[in-house]
Structures are given as structure tokens and as C-alpha cells.
Length: 467
Ligand SMILES: [Zn+2]
Image (cartoon, rainbow, N blue to C red; front, side, top):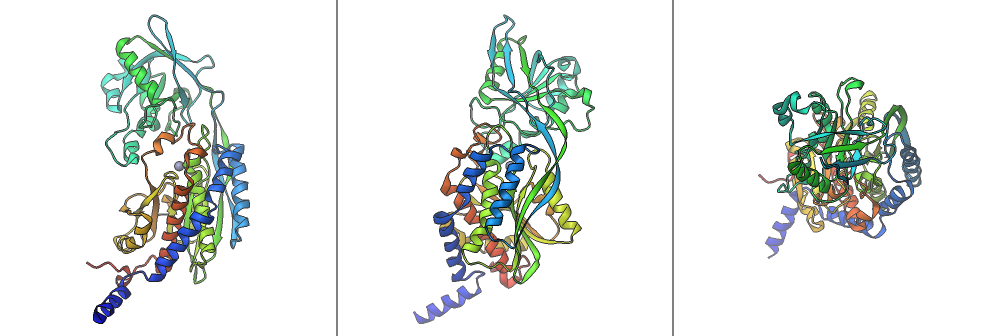
């Protein structure tokens, strides 16, 4: 028995984590669940400030709020980083209806896509042609498309477990639909909302005109999934039906905005930087609670939780609240540009931008050695039901920091309900659960703690993985 215990002891000393790590993770999770700040912060950001589209007054309120709250945490440094951002304004609420060949009209729910041009002030009315992909446009050709509204109606694939994959399989309709349809003389574009659920809410999101000259740009709007179904059925019954929509959005000159940054300076390696962040801007229809208020407040709480758990990081840990992820990624690009200019060695970056739902784990963009290092920590996360560790993408805002040797990661919460809310009017505070949000903040803090303690250059003996 004694021999067995000794053997156990010897075995435990060669794994990559100690009893202390278990205790520290417990402390971090307890702190977040009993004394977390993320939910209170999200309440303010969502309910007092609201939707924060780049260039809006709310986005500037959010910048000031973020700076003030970080200053209250007693970090070593808090500052704003200037970044020029696009300013697109939705204008009056959009209006749309279908009109049958017998002149019967039915109102439908639409919203302009971010970056779209307005319709004529009196609106736009035309016949509709439904397609599911860009290939179909090519087949139909200018003869059948010219003068019509193209209706992109490819639904998100329901049997994919990762709803992000389903989104990825559809979003080109929203992003490039207008520029593709314009090639064949379409006069407008209506896109089925990126939503797996059937409901009445249109979901906005970014789109591009590429280099299309202004006079060739056609207005683009999203239609709710219920109304997409209705329009599709109605077209089958009456191919001469017409669609009317009116939107009055406009694009202004770029305006000055900011990334908000706070730092705990490292005690041993102050010139090695960790970033943890989310994006402070949001779409304008809801208040951006899941996208990405959740990631913002969780990232802020990572630094607070480190302090509250008595952890003094060896490396410099920065929280970055990125501006303009949604319609430009200017903040993410600017942060990486400045980091490069100042020769700052960013060894690790973690983003939370997949909603405030129950955390499942992380996706990693890193070397095999770093990934094996992460896998060796899996047992530490088990008590918190964190089990998803996969190689893959990280996050849009931290992506530009990628180099040959660093570790990029993205928090991966459960994604089943995310696209019920994403970029729609129901992305609101009441859709976020306090405990789920806090578990996410704790999970992020735990990963930051482990990477700071063991470093991002794992020695073979440190990785602890038995082959
Ligand atoms: Zn987002």
C-alpha cells in the first residue's frame, strides 16, 4: 500500500499541474460565481448604453464607460488607442411588402444590411427571383435577373452541431449577395436572415460592394425567416408577384474612435504580452448583449478575477475592448499594427465573441506542442464541465496578432441558441444567463492563469502528455 502511494506521488509529480492549480482554479470559479462583476457590467452596457454601432454616440459612451470601469480595478495601466472607424447609420425603420398580381399586399419584416445603400426615397418595387447560391445567378444570367430583386434563400444547415459551421455555410449570401447580383443587373437584394429558428426578426450584419462604383450599388436587406418562407411559397403560387422595400440608411465619413486597453504588468516577464478581449461595438437593432457585450465584460473580469484570486501574473496581461469588429475590424487591425510597430512580443491572445452561453471549452490556433500542453490541462477543467479543446480558429479581433510561435484561442460556449439572437433585435440583456456568463469569465481566467504559469514555450517534460 505504501509503495502504491509512493508510486502515485511520483506519478503526480510528473504531470504538468499540481494540487495548487486545482485549488487556484476552484478559487477563480468560486470568485466568479459568488463575487463576479461581469453580469453587473453587462447590465449597464446593455441597458444604460445600448446598441453601439461604430461611429455612434453610444459607441463613444461605451469607450468612456470601459475606461472608467477598468480604472476602478486598480490595474497598472489603462489607456485608449485611437482608431478611425466607418460610420453607417440605419435611418428610419425599413418597410417592406409583397404585392400579388391581384394587387393584394402583405407586409414583411426586413432590415437593411450594414453598409447597404438606401433605396430611392419612394422605395423600390420589382419582381423577385429566388436563388440559393451564386451559381444559380450564373445559370439564370442577365436575361432573367436584370431589373429584378434577387432573393437569396439558402437556409442554415440544420443538422450541423456547430451552428457556426451552419452560419459559415450561408453567410456569403449576406456578405457578397449584392455585389454578385449586381453583376447581372439586379436592382436589389433580399437575404434570408442567418437564423436557424423560424421567427419574425430580421438579422442584420455586414456586407460588401467590393470595388463597385457608387452608381452600381444596389440596396440589400435581410428578411425574417418566417417571411422568407412566406415569400418563397408566394412566389411559387404567383411568379409575377412584386416586392416593395424602402430603407434610408447612409454612409458617412470615417470618425475617430478607440480601443480600450487595461494592463496588469508582468512581475517576471513584463515584455511578454497576453491579450484577452472582446469587441465593444455591436449592431444597432438590439443592445448587443451576446454579441459581444458578454465577451467585453468577461474579458474585463479576467483581470479582476486574477487580482481577486491573489494571482500575480509573470507576464503582462492586457484586456482589450476592440472597436469596430462588426463592420470593419479596424480596432483589431489597429491593435496588431501598433503591437508590431512597438515590437511588443504578444505570446498569447484569447477572444470571447461567440455569445455569453454555457462555456464548453476553447478553440486554438497554435502549434502541436502548445496544443498538447493544453490537452494536459484537461483534467483540471473537468470539474467545471469544460471539455471542448480543438484546433481551429480563435477570433476576428485577435487574428491579426498571429505569428509563427504564439497561441491564439477563442472561448467556445454552447452555440445552439446563439443565432436566435445574433445581430437581431432580441440580442438583449434578458437573453443572457448570469451563471453561464460568469462560468465563461472563470474559464477564460483559468486558461490565462495556466498559460502564464507554464509559459507558451512548453518543454517536452512540461507538456505532461504521455505518448
Ligand atoms: Zn461579435
